[in-house]
Length: 218
Image (cartoon, rainbow, N blue to C red; front, side, top):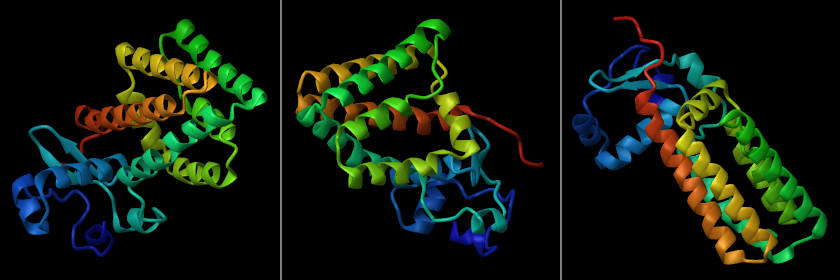
């Protein structure tokens, strides 16, 4: 990001091969792959199998991007915050919150049953956060979610979740979570929500490599 912002790397420049780039940066290849996936999700680079990684952002794009928060960091934050929110919700079990959570789950199930997919499960995530009755943690989650509202993030989320089998899996995890919370199982609720987020993160970052998108010149 700094190299793009400072003009050391130009728009449409092709980055060195993975092995060479890892050596230049002094990091492992798995670390490099995770970083590149995050930068692609942020719309700064484009990776295509057999074509390498090309910078598609300009210095102005990076300068106007705001806080230097990568998608990987967003997932890291959510993995810290959301399992604990699920745990607290299962411990507190305020009746009105349980009803609101079940309603959010029912709406998701209804949309999936009628269309075979769903646009977002964020209403469920927010219902869990409200049910935790901790405004500090709820605000922290909203700050993390603020970084998921870009058009690029929404586009890739839709692409990553397109296969019906993946969406059915997600709906089933939401169903399990609501059962754990409403039946007072904090450990189970936290574990389900953690696995749900890890699965979504992996599907989304992996899905980047199947998303060719617009080709840069040349």
